[in-house]
Image (cartoon, rainbow, N blue to C red):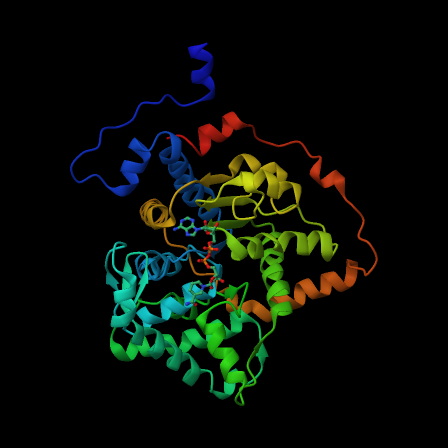
Length: 392
Ligand SMILES: NC(=O)c1ccc[n+]([C@@H]2O[C@H](COP(=O)([O-])OP(=O)(O)OC[C@H]3O[C@@H](n4cnc5c(N)ncnc54)[C@H](O)[C@@H]3O)[C@@H](O)[C@H]2O)c1
């Protein structure tokens, strides 16, 4: 029996931790089981498959990641290395990213403070992150000033809006001499499109809404967001490449990233099989039925994930503030930088390509149900997954 097991699975024989060990070596040598095992699988999936094949990588962001400094510490380096090609974020992560790009100060405080006193003293708390109320007011004023510019006076998709906003943050970083502080600025620099699935649900959206009560013509084109995100995935797949999703947290950005496939298949009637690689780090459980905790298997049933690729999917039940730095460090150590795909610069061409295909094959009537696509036998089994993803 033991021999049979050994043929199927790698032996659990960890390497000892030692002085000066690198993060990547520690993960490969000592993260062997339970959540540590899943994290090691996640690192190897991200580096060895999602990035190594040169495929397109989409990242979704939820939770208060940028207030905790994860934009500067991890996301900017990942973009710089060409490891993230497009992003869907909550507005909150982009709003709080602005503080870093504008040189404002946030502090590592404590979760055990008197909030009534903090309110009296004008201090904002996000768990153990503290900052002055003026940080909000100054950031709000920055957004309101910037969006008065002529280029903002029209309805636009959120990738265009964030690109234009990022241009101003990038310029502010340059003038302040604080390069590579902001995710928005890095996305502008490397041509990484950033979308938000709920543009009104953040302080950025609140300021845009207030300015519409004046003479601002800025509005968000959510239809373009839906079709543009689908266009990115269609572009990745039609040229024979892979589409990977790296999901931090869950929430609406998780669905917005995954729904690109049903948009292509179920709604537009274009033949497709689903995203190729799925990696999620979350605290959400699957048994409540909510999308945040929904497993990759459930996503397969919706056409969101290619059924053949299910064995390559990894879910880590970990706080992103722990998993993201580890996955980023691992990838930056084990994988050579990639040339940024600069998808933003191809946005119109990608949009026209999916539009043309939709107008060719799409219809208003009910789309034919292609169950034959879902019936193909998985090419790889669990044992092979253990050998290639979960072991080293
Ligand atoms: N000032 C602002 O602009 C502001 C501030 C906060 C929230 N918001 C808005 O509120 C909405 C909700 O945002 P949210 O990001 O707080 O989403 P959320 O709390 O709904 O979280 C989404 C999912 O991610 C998971 N998650 C959260 N933090 C995690 C972590 N550290 N590790 C692993 N999983 C984690 C949650 O369990 C949940 O399943 C967004 O639309 C956002 O823009 C705006």
